[in-house]
Length: 273
Image: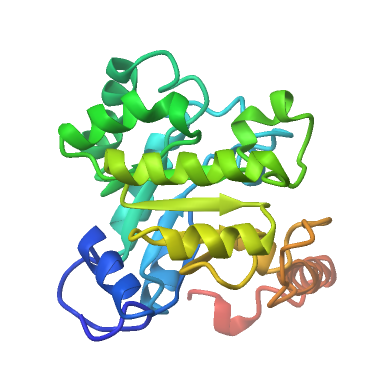
């Protein structure tokens, strides 16, 4: 594959492609997706990895955290993203309560995403405490993306959405990252950690790091698509808004409503005879 971002091939991106991109120092983008139509847009734009995040709890289902969303909630979204894309590697989040209790539970949940939805990999949160789950998944042939730093499923334990990895906890995060790599994770998301720590982790690992609020030194960057498109009212500090779809959608729907109210729509060209 000549280029991970924007490259054109007749096949899906694989975890091996991500490893090769790390070896040659190529940075790449990851974006969330939750439906076929947006997945198709992002896939055609050349985004190599699409994440069906448990962030769907908030941006799709309207909850105030990721905790309530279930496997059954995420399965149809994942299947839609797979159907809507042809090149991107599609990663499914394992939601809260679907993997923590045992490696067997993790494997059963992951198997559903792989078999029923067609996901190509799964993501789970946590460090050394989930190593048995990672080991079981990898042994069963399930590629695993790890997630360290601010792990939203543990927000109640962490005391809110706060920067993680300062001081001694930074050394613990480094240790977790190395252990996850050794256990077989193919990449690791670093969320809301100091930039210098993210850089140290990135240079210490042979697998790609994916940053979100972790500075510019990580191998990849991920954002929730509604955040980068300007649909989120109060996005986090690490979000850059690349469009203002909220304003454009408001303009369009008001124009439609005004024309309906005035009788201007539908016009003759929108009507069958």
